[in-house]
Image (cartoon, rainbow, N blue to C red; front, side):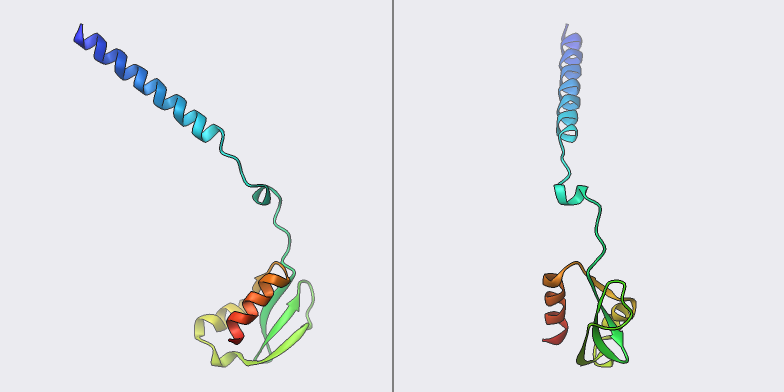
Length: 102
């Protein structure tokens, strides 16, 4: 009798665990901002003739050139700027500029 009771309790616990996992993972929602497709960044920070420059997406000429010699930055940052650092909007651009100019 004890064996049947233990098996019954084990089966019930397994079913309860499975139901709990289904509920947990079945109700997970993706935030609205993650559901929408990511839009192209509005700006990019890049090196331009040795200086830090702001580019609008899709443009080859800089929107703004800052008086910051990129060679004065750490090699890691120089590499990032050669590749381009994207900024989604003016707020993110301002944050990046503050990071590099302060």
